[in-house]
Image: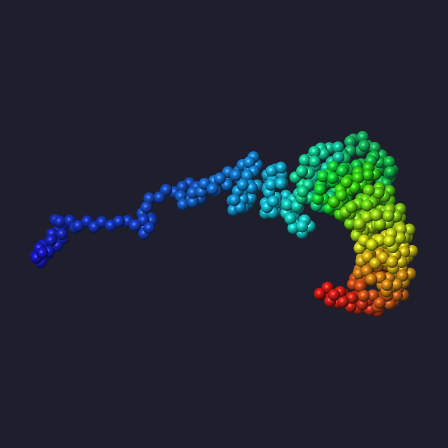
Length: 457
Protein backbone atom coordinates (compact mmCIF):
# COMPACT_ATOMS: atom_id res chain seq x y z
CA UNK A 1 0.00 0.00 0.00
CA UNK A 2 1.33 3.50 -0.76
CA UNK A 3 2.56 5.63 2.07
CA UNK A 4 0.04 8.34 1.18
CA UNK A 5 -2.83 5.91 1.68
CA UNK A 6 -1.52 4.90 5.08
CA UNK A 7 -1.12 8.49 6.18
CA UNK A 8 -4.59 9.29 4.83
CA UNK A 9 -6.13 6.49 6.81
CA UNK A 10 -4.42 7.70 9.97
CA UNK A 11 -5.66 11.19 9.37
CA UNK A 12 -9.23 10.01 8.95
CA UNK A 13 -9.05 8.07 12.22
CA UNK A 14 -7.75 11.12 13.97
CA UNK A 15 -10.61 13.24 12.66
CA UNK A 16 -13.10 10.63 13.85
CA UNK A 17 -14.61 9.84 10.48
CA UNK A 18 -13.47 6.24 10.50
CA UNK A 19 -13.76 4.36 13.90
CA UNK A 20 -10.77 2.36 15.03
CA UNK A 21 -10.98 -1.41 14.65
CA UNK A 22 -12.60 -3.25 17.62
CA UNK A 23 -10.19 -5.46 19.54
CA UNK A 24 -11.77 -8.55 21.27
CA UNK A 25 -10.23 -10.79 23.99
CA UNK A 26 -11.40 -13.83 25.93
CA UNK A 27 -11.80 -13.61 29.71
CA UNK A 28 -9.87 -16.28 31.61
CA UNK A 29 -11.89 -17.21 34.74
CA UNK A 30 -8.78 -18.44 36.49
CA UNK A 31 -7.02 -15.18 35.81
CA UNK A 32 -9.72 -12.88 37.11
CA UNK A 33 -12.28 -14.65 39.25
CA UNK A 34 -13.66 -11.39 40.59
CA UNK A 35 -15.51 -10.72 37.36
CA UNK A 36 -17.38 -14.10 37.53
CA UNK A 37 -20.90 -14.12 38.84
CA UNK A 38 -21.12 -16.12 42.11
CA UNK A 39 -23.90 -17.66 44.23
CA UNK A 40 -23.23 -17.43 47.97
CA UNK A 41 -25.02 -20.16 50.00
CA UNK A 42 -26.66 -19.35 53.33
CA UNK A 43 -24.88 -22.37 54.83
CA UNK A 44 -21.24 -21.28 54.97
CA UNK A 45 -20.07 -24.88 55.31
CA UNK A 46 -21.76 -25.89 52.07
CA UNK A 47 -19.54 -26.25 49.09
CA UNK A 48 -20.16 -27.67 45.66
CA UNK A 49 -16.75 -29.29 45.82
CA UNK A 50 -17.59 -31.35 48.98
CA UNK A 51 -20.88 -33.03 48.21
CA UNK A 52 -21.03 -36.12 50.53
CA UNK A 53 -20.39 -39.43 48.91
CA UNK A 54 -23.07 -42.07 49.02
CA UNK A 55 -20.91 -44.12 51.39
CA UNK A 56 -20.80 -41.25 53.88
CA UNK A 57 -24.54 -40.77 53.68
CA UNK A 58 -25.05 -44.47 54.41
CA UNK A 59 -22.73 -44.37 57.41
CA UNK A 60 -24.57 -41.36 58.80
CA UNK A 61 -27.84 -43.25 58.44
CA UNK A 62 -26.37 -46.29 60.24
CA UNK A 63 -25.18 -44.10 63.13
CA UNK A 64 -28.52 -42.31 63.41
CA UNK A 65 -30.52 -45.55 63.48
CA UNK A 66 -28.03 -47.74 65.34
CA UNK A 67 -30.32 -48.36 68.31
CA UNK A 68 -33.03 -49.89 66.11
CA UNK A 69 -30.73 -51.50 63.56
CA UNK A 70 -27.24 -52.08 65.04
CA UNK A 71 -25.30 -52.94 61.91
CA UNK A 72 -21.62 -53.19 62.74
CA UNK A 73 -20.07 -56.57 62.00
CA UNK A 74 -21.09 -56.43 58.33
CA UNK A 75 -19.16 -53.20 57.75
CA UNK A 76 -15.69 -52.96 56.32
CA UNK A 77 -13.01 -52.26 58.97
CA UNK A 78 -12.48 -48.65 57.85
CA UNK A 79 -16.23 -48.00 57.92
CA UNK A 80 -16.60 -49.70 61.30
CA UNK A 81 -14.01 -47.30 62.77
CA UNK A 82 -15.97 -44.28 61.55
CA UNK A 83 -19.23 -45.58 62.97
CA UNK A 84 -17.68 -46.34 66.40
CA UNK A 85 -16.18 -42.85 66.59
CA UNK A 86 -19.60 -41.25 66.14
CA UNK A 87 -21.84 -43.55 68.19
CA UNK A 88 -23.50 -41.94 71.21
CA UNK A 89 -22.38 -43.19 74.67
CA UNK A 90 -26.05 -42.97 75.71
CA UNK A 91 -27.11 -46.00 73.69
CA UNK A 92 -28.88 -48.73 75.72
CA UNK A 93 -26.61 -51.46 77.11
CA UNK A 94 -28.84 -54.12 75.59
CA UNK A 95 -27.58 -52.85 72.21
CA UNK A 96 -23.91 -52.14 72.95
CA UNK A 97 -22.83 -54.52 75.75
CA UNK A 98 -22.18 -57.67 73.76
CA UNK A 99 -21.78 -56.03 70.36
CA UNK A 100 -19.14 -53.34 70.83
CA UNK A 101 -15.66 -54.28 72.03
CA UNK A 102 -13.89 -51.12 70.88
CA UNK A 103 -12.04 -49.60 73.86
CA UNK A 104 -12.35 -46.09 72.45
CA UNK A 105 -16.14 -46.25 72.63
CA UNK A 106 -16.13 -47.51 76.24
CA UNK A 107 -13.60 -44.85 77.19
CA UNK A 108 -16.08 -42.21 76.06
CA UNK A 109 -18.80 -43.94 78.09
CA UNK A 110 -16.61 -43.93 81.23
CA UNK A 111 -15.57 -40.30 80.87
CA UNK A 112 -19.19 -39.28 80.45
CA UNK A 113 -20.25 -41.05 83.67
CA UNK A 114 -17.30 -40.37 86.02
CA UNK A 115 -14.89 -37.47 86.41
CA UNK A 116 -11.98 -39.65 87.58
CA UNK A 117 -11.16 -42.74 85.56
CA UNK A 118 -8.08 -44.95 85.92
CA UNK A 119 -7.88 -48.29 84.16
CA UNK A 120 -4.90 -49.53 86.19
CA UNK A 121 -7.26 -51.23 88.65
CA UNK A 122 -9.27 -52.78 85.84
CA UNK A 123 -6.61 -54.60 83.88
CA UNK A 124 -6.21 -51.65 81.52
CA UNK A 125 -9.72 -52.22 80.09
CA UNK A 126 -12.21 -49.36 79.72
CA UNK A 127 -15.03 -51.79 79.05
CA UNK A 128 -14.35 -53.73 82.24
CA UNK A 129 -14.19 -50.46 84.20
CA UNK A 130 -17.54 -49.33 82.83
CA UNK A 131 -19.43 -52.49 83.68
CA UNK A 132 -17.85 -52.99 87.11
CA UNK A 133 -18.55 -49.42 88.18
CA UNK A 134 -22.00 -49.52 86.62
CA UNK A 135 -22.95 -52.61 88.65
CA UNK A 136 -21.31 -51.21 91.79
CA UNK A 137 -23.43 -48.07 91.47
CA UNK A 138 -26.63 -50.09 91.20
CA UNK A 139 -25.79 -52.13 94.31
CA UNK A 140 -24.62 -49.15 96.37
CA UNK A 141 -27.90 -47.32 95.69
CA UNK A 142 -30.11 -50.36 96.18
CA UNK A 143 -32.66 -49.81 98.98
CA UNK A 144 -34.13 -53.06 100.35
CA UNK A 145 -37.93 -53.28 100.14
CA UNK A 146 -37.96 -50.15 97.93
CA UNK A 147 -35.76 -50.89 94.92
CA UNK A 148 -37.09 -53.66 92.70
CA UNK A 149 -34.62 -56.54 92.43
CA UNK A 150 -35.21 -56.54 88.67
CA UNK A 151 -33.04 -53.40 88.49
CA UNK A 152 -30.07 -55.58 89.39
CA UNK A 153 -31.15 -58.74 87.62
CA UNK A 154 -31.76 -56.90 84.34
CA UNK A 155 -28.19 -55.58 84.37
CA UNK A 156 -26.55 -58.97 85.02
CA UNK A 157 -26.79 -60.36 81.44
CA UNK A 158 -24.87 -57.35 80.14
CA UNK A 159 -22.28 -57.26 82.95
CA UNK A 160 -21.57 -60.91 83.72
CA UNK A 161 -18.84 -61.48 81.13
CA UNK A 162 -16.86 -58.37 82.06
CA UNK A 163 -17.09 -58.08 85.87
CA UNK A 164 -14.09 -59.54 87.70
CA UNK A 165 -14.09 -57.33 90.78
CA UNK A 166 -16.76 -55.59 92.86
CA UNK A 167 -15.75 -52.97 95.40
CA UNK A 168 -18.86 -51.93 97.32
CA UNK A 169 -18.17 -48.94 99.58
CA UNK A 170 -21.70 -48.66 101.02
CA UNK A 171 -24.82 -50.77 101.50
CA UNK A 172 -28.05 -48.97 102.26
CA UNK A 173 -30.54 -50.26 104.90
CA UNK A 174 -34.32 -50.32 104.38
CA UNK A 175 -36.27 -47.09 104.72
CA UNK A 176 -37.84 -46.94 108.18
CA UNK A 177 -41.50 -46.07 108.68
CA UNK A 178 -42.83 -43.58 111.22
CA UNK A 179 -43.56 -46.25 113.86
CA UNK A 180 -39.96 -47.44 113.81
CA UNK A 181 -38.68 -43.88 114.06
CA UNK A 182 -40.73 -43.24 117.22
CA UNK A 183 -39.56 -46.55 118.72
CA UNK A 184 -35.90 -45.76 118.00
CA UNK A 185 -36.26 -42.29 119.52
CA UNK A 186 -37.21 -44.02 122.78
CA UNK A 187 -34.14 -46.28 122.57
CA UNK A 188 -31.85 -43.38 121.68
CA UNK A 189 -32.91 -41.66 124.88
CA UNK A 190 -31.55 -44.53 126.95
CA UNK A 191 -28.49 -45.84 125.14
CA UNK A 192 -26.78 -45.63 121.77
CA UNK A 193 -25.72 -49.25 121.98
CA UNK A 194 -29.07 -50.85 122.76
CA UNK A 195 -29.34 -54.38 121.42
CA UNK A 196 -33.14 -54.23 121.11
CA UNK A 197 -33.18 -52.06 117.99
CA UNK A 198 -35.02 -53.58 115.02
CA UNK A 199 -32.92 -55.69 112.70
CA UNK A 200 -31.76 -54.10 109.46
CA UNK A 201 -30.89 -56.25 106.47
CA UNK A 202 -29.09 -55.12 103.34
CA UNK A 203 -28.66 -56.16 99.71
CA UNK A 204 -28.71 -59.93 99.18
CA UNK A 205 -25.61 -60.94 97.21
CA UNK A 206 -27.15 -64.34 96.51
CA UNK A 207 -28.96 -62.57 93.67
CA UNK A 208 -25.77 -62.07 91.68
CA UNK A 209 -22.74 -64.12 92.78
CA UNK A 210 -23.78 -67.35 91.10
CA UNK A 211 -24.50 -65.43 87.87
CA UNK A 212 -21.23 -63.49 87.67
CA UNK A 213 -19.19 -66.30 86.20
CA UNK A 214 -15.92 -64.32 86.11
CA UNK A 215 -16.08 -62.68 89.56
CA UNK A 216 -12.72 -63.03 91.31
CA UNK A 217 -12.71 -60.30 93.98
CA UNK A 218 -15.45 -59.06 96.31
CA UNK A 219 -14.80 -56.15 98.66
CA UNK A 220 -17.61 -55.00 100.98
CA UNK A 221 -18.29 -52.41 103.66
CA UNK A 222 -21.64 -52.59 105.46
CA UNK A 223 -22.19 -48.91 106.12
CA UNK A 224 -23.42 -45.64 104.63
CA UNK A 225 -21.22 -42.97 103.09
CA UNK A 226 -21.81 -39.31 103.82
CA UNK A 227 -24.76 -39.76 106.19
CA UNK A 228 -23.87 -36.46 107.91
CA UNK A 229 -26.43 -35.31 110.45
CA UNK A 230 -28.53 -38.40 109.75
CA UNK A 231 -25.94 -40.62 111.46
CA UNK A 232 -27.32 -43.59 113.38
CA UNK A 233 -25.43 -46.60 114.68
CA UNK A 234 -27.73 -49.06 112.98
CA UNK A 235 -26.77 -47.64 109.58
CA UNK A 236 -23.51 -49.53 110.13
CA UNK A 237 -25.02 -52.80 111.33
CA UNK A 238 -23.97 -56.11 109.76
CA UNK A 239 -26.87 -58.27 110.87
CA UNK A 240 -26.86 -62.01 111.42
CA UNK A 241 -29.14 -62.47 108.42
CA UNK A 242 -26.74 -60.35 106.32
CA UNK A 243 -23.96 -62.64 107.46
CA UNK A 244 -25.83 -65.81 106.60
CA UNK A 245 -26.78 -64.54 103.14
CA UNK A 246 -23.24 -63.35 102.43
CA UNK A 247 -21.77 -66.70 103.49
CA UNK A 248 -24.18 -68.49 101.18
CA UNK A 249 -23.36 -66.11 98.31
CA UNK A 250 -19.61 -66.53 98.70
CA UNK A 251 -19.97 -70.29 98.82
CA UNK A 252 -21.90 -70.20 95.55
CA UNK A 253 -19.18 -68.17 93.80
CA UNK A 254 -16.64 -70.85 92.92
CA UNK A 255 -14.41 -68.42 90.97
CA UNK A 256 -13.86 -66.06 93.92
CA UNK A 257 -10.19 -65.54 94.80
CA UNK A 258 -10.31 -62.50 97.11
CA UNK A 259 -12.82 -61.67 99.85
CA UNK A 260 -12.50 -58.39 101.75
CA UNK A 261 -15.01 -57.53 104.47
CA UNK A 262 -13.78 -54.41 106.28
CA UNK A 263 -15.16 -51.99 108.87
CA UNK A 264 -18.41 -53.91 109.23
CA UNK A 265 -18.45 -54.93 112.92
CA UNK A 266 -17.79 -58.58 112.15
CA UNK A 267 -17.59 -60.37 115.51
CA UNK A 268 -16.74 -63.95 116.50
CA UNK A 269 -20.16 -65.44 115.74
CA UNK A 270 -20.39 -63.81 112.33
CA UNK A 271 -16.87 -64.72 111.25
CA UNK A 272 -17.48 -68.33 112.26
CA UNK A 273 -20.65 -68.32 110.13
CA UNK A 274 -18.74 -67.00 107.12
CA UNK A 275 -15.78 -69.33 107.55
CA UNK A 276 -18.04 -72.37 107.81
CA UNK A 277 -18.97 -71.73 104.17
CA UNK A 278 -15.38 -71.04 103.09
CA UNK A 279 -13.91 -74.39 104.19
CA UNK A 280 -12.50 -76.25 101.20
CA UNK A 281 -13.35 -73.36 98.85
CA UNK A 282 -11.79 -74.27 95.48
CA UNK A 283 -10.24 -70.91 94.55
CA UNK A 284 -10.08 -68.49 97.52
CA UNK A 285 -6.49 -67.30 98.11
CA UNK A 286 -6.93 -64.02 100.03
CA UNK A 287 -9.08 -63.19 103.06
CA UNK A 288 -9.14 -59.66 104.48
CA UNK A 289 -11.19 -59.17 107.68
CA UNK A 290 -9.32 -56.11 108.95
CA UNK A 291 -10.90 -53.39 111.13
CA UNK A 292 -13.57 -55.58 112.71
CA UNK A 293 -14.39 -57.08 116.13
CA UNK A 294 -12.92 -60.57 115.80
CA UNK A 295 -11.63 -62.11 119.03
CA UNK A 296 -10.08 -65.42 120.07
CA UNK A 297 -13.08 -67.58 119.12
CA UNK A 298 -13.05 -66.12 115.66
CA UNK A 299 -9.29 -66.64 115.46
CA UNK A 300 -9.76 -70.35 116.14
CA UNK A 301 -12.09 -70.52 113.15
CA UNK A 302 -9.47 -68.73 111.04
CA UNK A 303 -6.88 -71.25 112.21
CA UNK A 304 -9.12 -74.07 111.02
CA UNK A 305 -9.62 -72.33 107.67
CA UNK A 306 -5.87 -71.96 107.12
CA UNK A 307 -5.49 -75.70 106.69
CA UNK A 308 -8.86 -76.25 104.97
CA UNK A 309 -8.29 -73.88 102.06
CA UNK A 310 -5.76 -72.58 99.53
CA UNK A 311 -5.29 -69.26 101.33
CA UNK A 312 -2.04 -67.38 100.68
CA UNK A 313 -2.87 -64.03 102.28
CA UNK A 314 -4.70 -63.35 105.56
CA UNK A 315 -5.28 -59.89 107.02
CA UNK A 316 -6.70 -59.64 110.56
CA UNK A 317 -5.38 -56.15 111.26
CA UNK A 318 -7.16 -54.05 113.91
CA UNK A 319 -9.31 -56.67 115.60
CA UNK A 320 -9.53 -57.97 119.17
CA UNK A 321 -7.17 -60.95 119.01
CA UNK A 322 -5.30 -61.90 122.18
CA UNK A 323 -2.92 -64.66 123.23
CA UNK A 324 -5.32 -67.60 122.82
CA UNK A 325 -6.29 -66.49 119.34
CA UNK A 326 -2.65 -66.14 118.36
CA UNK A 327 -1.93 -69.62 119.70
CA UNK A 328 -4.71 -71.08 117.55
CA UNK A 329 -3.31 -69.39 114.44
CA UNK A 330 0.22 -70.44 115.39
CA UNK A 331 -0.83 -74.07 115.70
CA UNK A 332 -2.29 -73.90 112.18
CA UNK A 333 0.94 -72.37 110.86
CA UNK A 334 2.98 -75.33 112.05
CA UNK A 335 1.03 -77.57 109.67
CA UNK A 336 0.56 -75.16 106.78
CA UNK A 337 2.49 -75.04 103.53
CA UNK A 338 0.53 -72.50 101.45
CA UNK A 339 0.21 -69.26 103.45
CA UNK A 340 2.60 -66.50 102.29
CA UNK A 341 1.48 -63.41 104.22
CA UNK A 342 -0.08 -62.93 107.68
CA UNK A 343 -1.05 -59.51 109.05
CA UNK A 344 -1.94 -59.37 112.77
CA UNK A 345 -1.14 -55.68 113.30
CA UNK A 346 -3.08 -53.64 115.87
CA UNK A 347 -4.23 -56.48 118.09
CA UNK A 348 -3.36 -57.43 121.68
CA UNK A 349 -1.35 -60.60 121.34
CA UNK A 350 1.14 -59.79 124.09
CA UNK A 351 4.32 -61.78 124.58
CA UNK A 352 2.42 -65.01 125.06
CA UNK A 353 0.81 -64.68 121.65
CA UNK A 354 3.94 -63.24 120.01
CA UNK A 355 6.09 -66.11 121.24
CA UNK A 356 3.51 -68.63 119.99
CA UNK A 357 3.70 -67.14 116.48
CA UNK A 358 7.51 -67.07 116.63
CA UNK A 359 7.73 -70.73 117.73
CA UNK A 360 5.44 -71.66 114.82
CA UNK A 361 7.84 -69.92 112.41
CA UNK A 362 10.60 -72.25 113.57
CA UNK A 363 8.62 -75.03 111.87
CA UNK A 364 6.95 -73.14 109.03
CA UNK A 365 9.09 -72.49 105.94
CA UNK A 366 6.55 -70.99 103.50
CA UNK A 367 5.42 -67.79 105.27
CA UNK A 368 7.34 -64.88 103.72
CA UNK A 369 5.68 -61.83 105.32
CA UNK A 370 4.66 -61.46 108.99
CA UNK A 371 3.25 -58.23 110.48
CA UNK A 372 3.03 -58.03 114.29
CA UNK A 373 3.18 -54.26 114.75
CA UNK A 374 1.38 -52.67 117.73
CA UNK A 375 0.76 -55.89 119.68
CA UNK A 376 2.25 -55.12 123.10
CA UNK A 377 5.33 -57.27 122.39
CA UNK A 378 8.49 -56.92 124.47
CA UNK A 379 11.95 -58.50 124.92
CA UNK A 380 10.75 -62.16 125.43
CA UNK A 381 9.17 -62.17 121.97
CA UNK A 382 12.35 -60.69 120.49
CA UNK A 383 14.37 -63.52 122.07
CA UNK A 384 12.34 -66.16 120.20
CA UNK A 385 12.46 -64.13 116.99
CA UNK A 386 16.24 -64.17 117.28
CA UNK A 387 16.07 -67.95 116.90
CA UNK A 388 13.66 -67.55 113.98
CA UNK A 389 16.11 -65.25 112.21
CA UNK A 390 18.88 -67.79 112.65
CA UNK A 391 16.91 -70.83 111.49
CA UNK A 392 14.03 -69.78 109.23
CA UNK A 393 14.91 -69.51 105.52
CA UNK A 394 11.50 -68.49 104.18
CA UNK A 395 10.84 -65.14 105.85
CA UNK A 396 11.60 -62.04 103.78
CA UNK A 397 9.63 -59.28 105.53
CA UNK A 398 9.13 -58.83 109.29
CA UNK A 399 7.32 -55.96 110.98
CA UNK A 400 7.62 -55.52 114.75
CA UNK A 401 7.09 -51.75 114.77
CA UNK A 402 5.38 -49.92 117.64
CA UNK A 403 6.28 -52.57 120.23
CA UNK A 404 8.45 -52.10 123.34
CA UNK A 405 11.28 -54.38 122.27
CA UNK A 406 13.93 -52.39 124.17
CA UNK A 407 17.76 -52.45 123.93
CA UNK A 408 18.10 -56.03 125.19
CA UNK A 409 15.59 -57.26 122.65
CA UNK A 410 17.35 -55.23 119.96
CA UNK A 411 20.65 -56.91 120.84
CA UNK A 412 19.10 -60.35 120.49
CA UNK A 413 17.52 -59.47 117.13
CA UNK A 414 20.91 -58.17 115.98
CA UNK A 415 22.56 -61.49 116.85
CA UNK A 416 19.88 -63.38 114.94
CA UNK A 417 20.27 -61.15 111.86
CA UNK A 418 24.01 -61.91 111.69
CA UNK A 419 23.08 -65.50 110.76
CA UNK A 420 20.22 -64.57 108.44
CA UNK A 421 20.53 -64.53 104.62
CA UNK A 422 16.93 -64.07 103.47
CA UNK A 423 15.20 -61.20 105.33
CA UNK A 424 15.28 -58.03 103.20
CA UNK A 425 12.77 -55.87 105.09
CA UNK A 426 12.72 -55.56 108.88
CA UNK A 427 10.59 -52.74 110.34
CA UNK A 428 11.68 -51.80 113.88
CA UNK A 429 10.37 -48.25 114.07
CA UNK A 430 9.31 -47.02 117.51
CA UNK A 431 10.67 -50.10 119.29
CA UNK A 432 13.55 -48.50 121.26
CA UNK A 433 16.01 -51.17 120.16
CA UNK A 434 18.92 -48.72 120.29
CA UNK A 435 20.87 -47.01 117.50
CA UNK A 436 23.73 -49.51 117.45
CA UNK A 437 21.45 -52.54 117.06
CA UNK A 438 19.35 -50.74 114.47
CA UNK A 439 22.46 -49.80 112.46
CA UNK A 440 23.84 -53.35 112.51
CA UNK A 441 20.47 -54.82 111.51
CA UNK A 442 20.22 -52.37 108.60
CA UNK A 443 23.68 -53.39 107.41
CA UNK A 444 22.64 -57.03 107.41
CA UNK A 445 19.50 -56.11 105.46
CA UNK A 446 21.57 -54.28 102.83
CA UNK A 447 23.78 -57.34 102.42
CA UNK A 448 20.73 -59.56 101.99
CA UNK A 449 19.19 -57.15 99.49
CA UNK A 450 22.40 -57.08 97.46
CA UNK A 451 22.61 -60.88 97.54
CA UNK A 452 18.99 -61.12 96.36
CA UNK A 453 19.66 -58.63 93.55
CA UNK A 454 22.60 -60.64 92.29
CA UNK A 455 20.68 -63.90 92.42
CA UNK A 456 17.78 -62.31 90.54
CA UNK A 457 20.05 -60.98 87.80
